[in-house]
Length: 112
Length: 115
Image 1 (cartoon, each protein chain N blue to C red):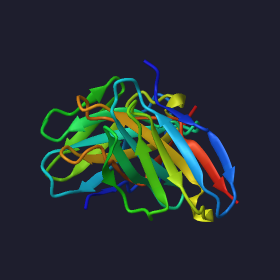
Image 2 (cartoon, rainbow over the protein chains, first blue to last red; image 1 turned 30 degrees about the vertical axis):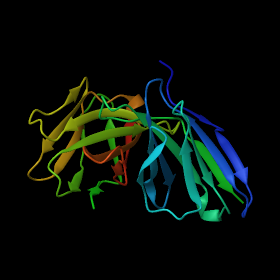
Image 3 (cartoon, each protein chain N blue to C red; image 1 turned 180 degrees about the vertical axis):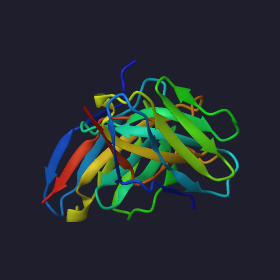
Image 4 (cartoon, rainbow over the protein chains, first blue to last red; image 1 turned 135 degrees about the horizontal axis):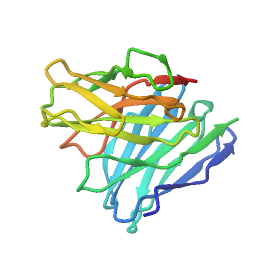
């Protein structure tokens, strides 16, 4: 089985712009979760989508949003980028039958 | 809210020796999962081992084993016969069973295996 894939792998954006990141889960997995990883704050949960519905949400401003499509692929969007949004964004997929999540390679976002 | 604490920012071990990474957590839940993830320099998060809270038996995966003390809310990872490829950041993570897939991570421990 193919693993979790994320595109793009690297992005450089300017303050004030918006960005969309994509995540394709492992085949058969219907849950996709997003995490932000920074040196200062560590790994923080952004949100989770399951069957096209947001099931959980972390403590991030409304500039961070996401969605999930019928094929379970997910996108996250960050609007009005700030320097502090520079981070590694990880997505993870899971199926109801298992307890663990499997992570993609991440998207490295740099905001200048 | 759940919290996960890893009190060792960095550790080092000689190749072939054994090392133990510490993790404590705080929760009022009774039903949950605990995980150890490894993040090598490539930044790919890799699941090392998982433990269900209702299981008294400690989980084992080849050279990796855990010491799960539910009453003490402690979940340490023991790596036996350490290998150079074990060099990575190790994260302890907590997940409630009945609350979707939200993982709460500790700050991580950098493990360096020396030859």
